[in-house]
Image (cartoon, rainbow, N blue to C red):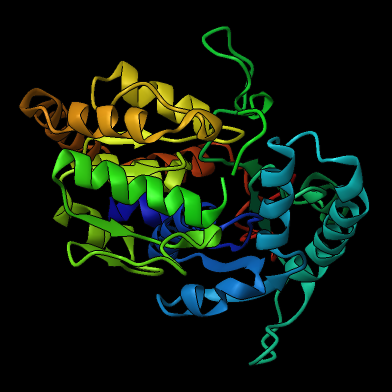
Length: 337
């Protein structure tokens, strides 16, 4: 492995990531692995994640756009591809801020230390609109990576074409439904308020705990089962923890992950948020409490944990790099695109 690392040119790499924490976290793992190969990595994402990125030793650069505003537009429209007419101007403003921040993220010095930076390669997720244009302008290689299937397939519809229909139930009503389902099934529960403000302004019983912004990789291994919206990061954390999983999707790829959980036998069929009731939630919890479901979840966790997804992503990046210049060239560590 060390010989392989020595043969790979050391590059300045810009990771351009647009999205929520669940989108950012996998790229943070990718950044850390790339640094092991001697690359200088800058993770450019929304300012909300500055502390999250810096806390693990990866350089940060702020991108425009507010992931919460964008997500709220998706929730209102119940679609990632088709915003409501009333949100069009707001979404255009968000996209403009993102696009205008991409070139500085690849060319500007570190905003704190002032250390110069010019990307020699770019890795971006698809919502980082404009990354292809930046790569062409800088004449550097670009590798698109995502946590969601993005290439055409006949196996399932494009994940971002589905939506649940008109929801969201107000937070108080949804919280009351959760509490009643837990009581009906005789279970204790942990409620993460999230962006839906669950568990707020409601009387909570002693066997239910409200916990905000808790790392899933710490929390889920201490739970028997999980119920969530079905984002890829949250879904992966539940699977790795060996938790039976119920998905309550409202738009985008959440439906796909819910169907996969059900197909694998580790959870009930997904229940879109408009169809969620005390009865349907109670039945889903009862399903997940079955020993055979827990057993399948543990088997899937063992299989997932044996994989090295980050290593596969790094390997794909290195395999697709263009041929370096000759060793005699003074720019030998640069890559010709």
